[in-house]
Amino acid sequence: MLYYLFRYLEEFGIPGSHMWTYISFRSLLTLILSLVISAWFGEYFIKWMKRHNVSEAQRDKSIDPYGVEKKGVPTMGGVIILVSIIVPCLLFGRLRNIYMILMLVTTIWLGALGFADDYIKMKITKDGLKPIYKLIGQTLLGLFVGLTLWLSPDAVIRENVTMQRSGNQEIVVHKSEKVKSTCTTIPFVKNNNLDYTELVSFCGKYKTAAGWLLFVIMTTIVVVAVSNGSNLNDGMDGMTAGNSAIIGVALGIFAYVSSHIEFASYLNIMYIPESQELVIFICAFIGALVGFLWYNAYPAQIFMGDTGSLAIGGIIAVTAIIIHKELLIPILCFVFLMESLSVILQVNVAKWGNKRGKKLRVFKRAPIHDTFRVKPGQLAPDVKVFLNWPKGCWLESKITVRFWIITIIMAALSIITLKIR
Image 1 (cartoon, one colour):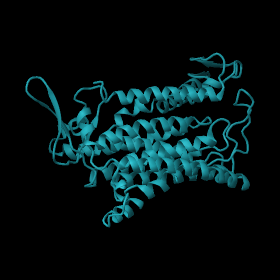
Image 2 (cartoon, rainbow, N blue to C red):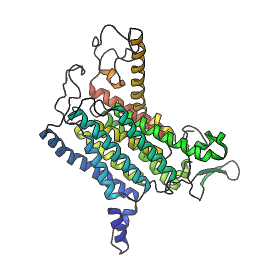
Image 3 (spheres, one colour):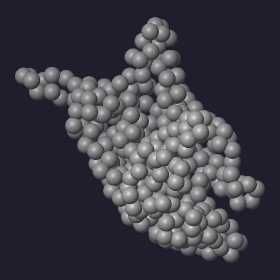
Image 4 (spheres, rainbow, N blue to C red):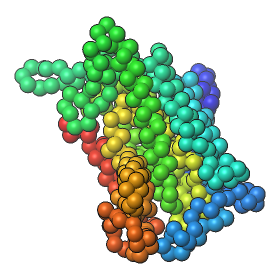
């Protein structure tokens, strides 16, 4: 809203109004405001939740190896994150921008879905919202995002083309026309654009429509997978907020270079007009998460809950899809991927063992972060564990920081893919 106000005032020659045209200026204001809101609103929100006795017992002494019992800690801390993202974006963002609209819809939709799950856990049943309902909600969002990017005339790119100059020197130019495109980026490949329509070329004259359908399906899969991965990662104080803030920094860099034609040409990547508004949103995202860590770092004063974790995963997924970097998700969100795979492996091996009268486990516990805090002898003696590592147990804060370090390494590797091909 302030963006449009100052652009209007610029017509009257008001000093300083032109500053609002600079993406760097608005991004930094957004980052600062989201941090302030998260820290300030967070304190009042925690007090209000405690006053109204809104809490859940997330872990007890039987799970924590050091006997730390976390009862009476408020949940639904994701509300702090959502407010800290939405308010700065409404103030400093261009609200008619298709990408800003998609990000706000993603935040509100998955935030509401997670809020419903947290509310049901506290008021009705500890199991929360049935998994099928969460899956339906995530799928609907994925379909909405994919179809919007397909059908909206504002969601376009300018393709990058490598041309030969005199001699062997190569230059990159971007086609002058803006086009709808199902291209995406393949990491570590020189000519790193993959067109989904080429994968369905057997459809003949219908291959363009088939390519877009494949893109919509891919979008839905990415949204569901990353959202659930983020949800599974939310099991220790500061874990998801820290990992997601690091991922957000990498996504912000990708969004910025994709929206800047000179950087896009230098790096030989697609130029996505108007995607600079994603930088505004990502700055709000990072600021909200860092501010939330003020209260969520060990020992947590508030838990994020599904209100935050589902929305965080959706935000990461949709941002990657908009900038055509969804194939980087396995690298960038490596920790989320490992959390999901550990649960899938653990559940399926346990079922396979139960059919044969055996108690089999791949890890001591799943998701994978829980396996690092199991004391020797804590598991039942008749349980056979294939990967019985580590032998001891780690402090929760040490596990969290080490997962952050892994995410920093993977985020750096993701950024390096811009040059290493």
